[in-house]
Image (tube, rainbow, N blue to C red):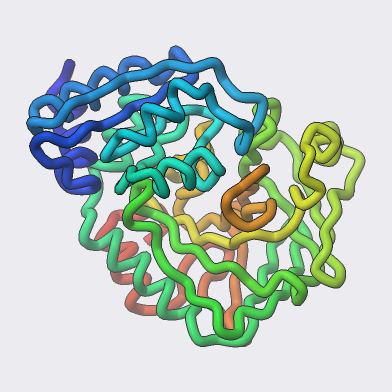
Length: 326
């Protein structure tokens, strides 16, 4: 295995998770595409003096379904849980149950390959990336309204009064900052042109998907095949809240210029917006859709225009990260 792959795994184990001697680390998989990464991480765990446990399971039909009891019990006794599952477990009842039982740290590398790991965790200035996430949070927190527009026809407004925007620094790779608008306030439409997952049949979008909002409620519109697939997704889920607005997230990883078809990378495309749909955690269902090149205004002040940041400090950090277009 090459040196970059080993170094990337050590970033996850040593820096992101701080694995300590004597800990038990559970690594779960549901796809053959992640087996190489699983073995790589297990080796890094072993070198850190901890005990790796790799378990493989059948892929769930959707996030939020019960996981096999054997894996649930293993998670209850693990200090750390790293999931590589394509149908992710982060934020679902299984994740929450494990944390209540004693799992102290959970890290999602959903569906990622070794190449993804190198790009997201190793070949990036992690300090500058974290600073950019904090800056975007500062520019959003304490404001009244978020407005999103795009060339495809998005025109969306939501109240973010008393909402805190913060980067994810503990449960996934760096490169996302999240805010959850007041659900009842959302109005307008969002037109997605990047990726969508789940359902698995979508991933990279070939056509746009439009979601209309009114009085806090949303519905999928449009006659395209992919819009129809997402609209029918409601029928496959027991929770009618699947199209509730859950979060809006800025993506800003410089090594992801375009969607890849793998969720953890796609929601970090530099300058994208990732919008999560579903009820609050623990998720009984959840889907993430992305917009490339959106314009975002916070209290009528532009934060980004067509995917490019306006704030001088954010632009400086983007340049130091060698992000495309800066």
